[in-house]
Image (cartoon, rainbow, N blue to C red):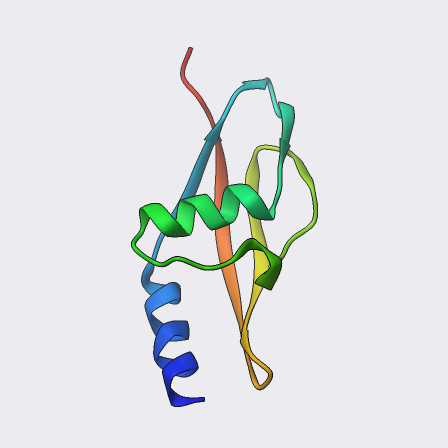
Length: 86
Protein backbone atom coordinates (compact mmCIF):
# COMPACT_ATOMS: atom_id res chain seq x y z
CA UNK A 1 0.00 0.00 0.00
CA UNK A 2 2.83 2.44 0.80
CA UNK A 3 4.36 1.76 -2.64
CA UNK A 4 1.01 2.55 -4.25
CA UNK A 5 0.72 5.77 -2.23
CA UNK A 6 4.23 6.81 -3.29
CA UNK A 7 3.33 6.10 -6.91
CA UNK A 8 0.11 8.12 -6.46
CA UNK A 9 2.16 11.16 -5.40
CA UNK A 10 4.47 10.69 -8.41
CA UNK A 11 1.47 10.51 -10.76
CA UNK A 12 -0.05 13.69 -9.32
CA UNK A 13 3.20 15.51 -10.14
CA UNK A 14 2.92 14.70 -13.85
CA UNK A 15 1.18 17.35 -15.91
CA UNK A 16 -0.78 15.51 -18.57
CA UNK A 17 -1.37 17.31 -21.85
CA UNK A 18 -2.65 15.31 -24.78
CA UNK A 19 -2.44 16.86 -28.24
CA UNK A 20 -5.06 15.79 -30.74
CA UNK A 21 -6.35 16.88 -34.12
CA UNK A 22 -9.48 18.97 -33.76
CA UNK A 23 -11.87 21.06 -35.81
CA UNK A 24 -12.87 23.88 -33.49
CA UNK A 25 -13.84 22.33 -30.14
CA UNK A 26 -14.54 18.87 -31.55
CA UNK A 27 -11.82 16.24 -31.90
CA UNK A 28 -11.26 14.16 -35.00
CA UNK A 29 -11.56 10.80 -33.23
CA UNK A 30 -11.52 10.47 -29.45
CA UNK A 31 -9.22 10.28 -26.44
CA UNK A 32 -9.40 7.09 -24.34
CA UNK A 33 -7.57 5.52 -21.41
CA UNK A 34 -4.96 4.22 -23.89
CA UNK A 35 -3.97 7.81 -24.73
CA UNK A 36 -3.78 8.67 -21.02
CA UNK A 37 -1.55 5.62 -20.38
CA UNK A 38 0.76 6.75 -23.22
CA UNK A 39 0.93 10.28 -21.78
CA UNK A 40 1.84 8.88 -18.36
CA UNK A 41 4.52 6.70 -19.96
CA UNK A 42 6.05 9.82 -21.54
CA UNK A 43 6.08 11.32 -18.04
CA UNK A 44 8.05 8.30 -16.81
CA UNK A 45 5.27 6.26 -15.17
CA UNK A 46 4.16 3.04 -16.82
CA UNK A 47 0.54 2.36 -15.86
CA UNK A 48 -1.47 -0.41 -17.52
CA UNK A 49 -4.45 1.07 -19.34
CA UNK A 50 -6.86 -1.36 -17.68
CA UNK A 51 -6.28 0.45 -14.36
CA UNK A 52 -7.24 3.83 -15.85
CA UNK A 53 -10.89 4.85 -15.93
CA UNK A 54 -11.92 7.79 -18.06
CA UNK A 55 -14.78 8.29 -20.38
CA UNK A 56 -14.32 8.59 -24.11
CA UNK A 57 -13.58 12.25 -24.71
CA UNK A 58 -14.47 13.91 -27.99
CA UNK A 59 -13.82 17.61 -27.23
CA UNK A 60 -10.82 19.72 -26.23
CA UNK A 61 -10.69 20.90 -22.63
CA UNK A 62 -9.85 19.73 -19.10
CA UNK A 63 -10.99 16.36 -17.79
CA UNK A 64 -10.16 13.91 -15.01
CA UNK A 65 -9.45 10.19 -14.90
CA UNK A 66 -9.23 7.67 -12.07
CA UNK A 67 -6.20 5.41 -11.73
CA UNK A 68 -6.55 2.36 -9.48
CA UNK A 69 -3.11 1.56 -8.12
CA UNK A 70 -4.26 -0.70 -5.30
CA UNK A 71 -7.53 -1.84 -3.81
CA UNK A 72 -7.25 1.03 -1.29
CA UNK A 73 -5.42 3.60 -3.45
CA UNK A 74 -7.29 5.35 -6.25
CA UNK A 75 -5.89 8.57 -7.69
CA UNK A 76 -7.86 11.23 -9.53
CA UNK A 77 -5.69 12.73 -12.27
CA UNK A 78 -6.64 15.79 -14.24
CA UNK A 79 -5.56 16.08 -17.84
CA UNK A 80 -5.96 18.54 -20.65
CA UNK A 81 -6.68 17.92 -24.29
CA UNK A 82 -5.20 20.54 -26.59
CA UNK A 83 -5.82 21.00 -30.30
CA UNK A 84 -2.74 20.30 -32.42
CA UNK A 85 -1.41 23.24 -34.38
CA UNK A 86 -1.83 22.53 -38.07
